[in-house]
Image (cartoon, rainbow, N blue to C red; front, side, top):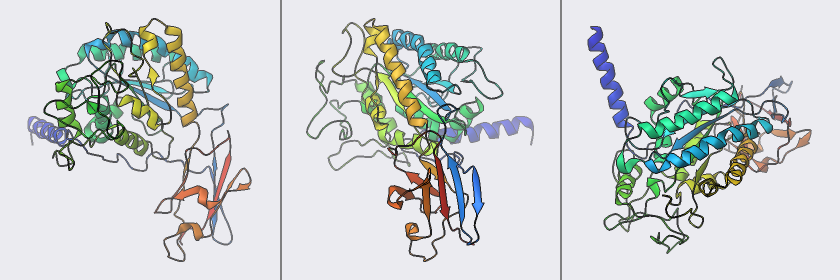
Length: 429
């Protein structure tokens, strides 16, 4: 085949894949098993059991490397907000360093549903799309800070999409579930197998996937609102959410389809999200595998909005995404009120929360499977023992994967720096 013909075929294949994975509700598992927490030492015993030893990171050493990707609302009203955020990033990086995090990556992604941009890292002319302070292409923290600011501003300059400019959740969903976009971002240096992905959603209004009902479209709001409550169009109401028919249409078309591209509705005829803050949380956890996970957002709260002359609305979807990881969203109001010190403090607190969340592993990958010797489907009644710093741990405190190769602790387990975890079990011969 001639080169021209081969290029046409390859282009067609890429177009088909992009089209196929542009639908809502797709949840692929990219490169399953890549991010594993393996043992540092294995000891075989005479009774054919084995002990695998794991060591938690020490706060005085390098902790898990975060790869922070800012997913930016691309509407024009974001210009002044991005200026404040980029100014705060330098201090935020200093705070990460103060917590022992000197190795990290930074990327910026457009938060709209435009097919050519959604789910893809963006860079200013002449810049890289991903900056890391470690590895073969390492840059200094100061360079990473400066360049990510330029890339965030480039997103605003290159964005397009009309009512589709506030789809931060959808865009990150595409980055994790569309294989072509994932491969493109990996080729740019981010979405790595040796880092913990940390999405930071940024917007001055609701994610389109949390748009309110309008005269023609009604949505199942049960994940966002208490039973019997609807969104209010009144500023100052705790459930204030501005009614924008364009965003409601985007919600229907991009967030409420199943894997076959069919709209999903409930018994009341309301459209039901197949992509939302909850599914994105799970996407991030699945992508990070045995690595710890964290995600957050930067935006406005319903009862703490800046002056009405400044275009601003509550970040519905972003608030819930941050809370799903156990921490509140960073409040953007202080930055818009001119109280930059308080905003910087919030950004620094987010750095602390990020560090605390990714410091320790809670999942441990065994090199072999625990053998179900009595074949009863219960691996906890086998010859299994877990010891942390010399202290036996009740097996009821852990979960064991169905394949017998992963031990998981609850995320709230009180780990200490440098803790030694010894897992003794019998694999099948």
